[in-house]
Length: 87
Image (tube, rainbow, N blue to C red; front, side, top):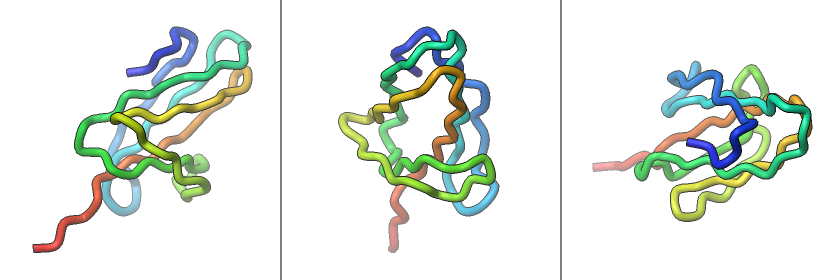
């Protein structure tokens, strides 16, 4: 879920490498936008990635949400995962 109506969540898919999932979204109305993305409760890590899903920046998660600042028509790839649990 996204707080901004001009942000389109285009893709939700399993990550190509490793665990977790990828969310691809974009700004659709030619506006600079600050957006809040709500994540599932089990997500403990969120990273900005390039289109090849290479991690570029780690994002802080607060109350199961990440904040993004998007430029007009910007495409963002977000990779999310849970911390691994060892038994």
